[in-house]
Length: 414
Image (cartoon, rainbow, N blue to C red):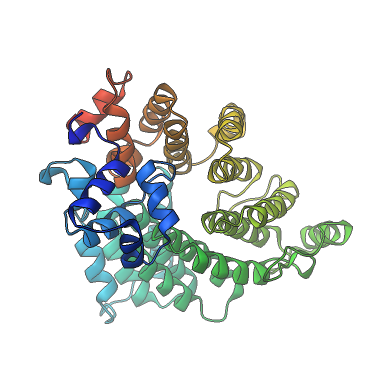
């Protein structure tokens, strides 16, 4: 078996030995546990975050493409346009002629649609000017949205640290507005999780969720407390009838809180706290059950189906692969699944492909990748995570139908 045919965990182990490091030494330099290194090397824990691959490569003193078995020309650590976004984030001067708020609102709305349709190359070109315009306009709401879009896009491109910077700017722009701060916290959580900082993501999401949800749904630091009962439903009814501005009792804000609970559950699972993750996702399900038919002005996509999608990922995290895949098959058959944004579905299918791969079902993994490519091509052709998955599936003999084509499209060699 050639080095190109080895799973990525075996390649990590090989380079660790070549650098005369024990598993404990590698773990210490990564500030992780020996158990984590052992699971990575044995393939028990998937190595599917490009930021983590970069971290491993730095410690092992090799280029990331060596672990990914990619020629240097296919390396995607700095996608085209990211430097322009970095420069925009580094600018603190305001444009001499601030844009009209109406025009800026239109630009932000178009950027959201571009992101939700997974047109990332187009969005990369748009974001720098959008950031300049938002900073010049001085509207906290539009600044938060612009920084959120930027952070979410950078997560897709494998630039987790830069994404965190953009998300932190969104938090700063929110000032004292609890709703804007809660929406910004979603981006903070995704950036932190993408960089492997699940503990920080968990803390940030719980704090923000407490501010977004009514007192009866508040979460303790260690346990989920409160009940989703008649009092909470009455608050919803009262808000609908009075038409008040968004606040902790407004169902549109509850969607933000629900999205934060989903992120908190995923972060808890990343910390190995599976019981807590289950409690958090159950709480999110309670919120979602009472939000049917609401509009989504904050772009969360939160609802019953996204909670079920999160349950798939949580089941896989705790080792219940069969249960995760059974749930997955049920989720993608639902009509509401087809109404989710292309970006959301494409990203989820990449996670499903990873679960199939971990279960040894190469055909299932290939099917998920091909489906993701048909829904959101940029999710598959531009994300480092997808390249890793395609490479792992394409090394099968013979490669499942469709994946060999994808491997050629993204520039991978077998």
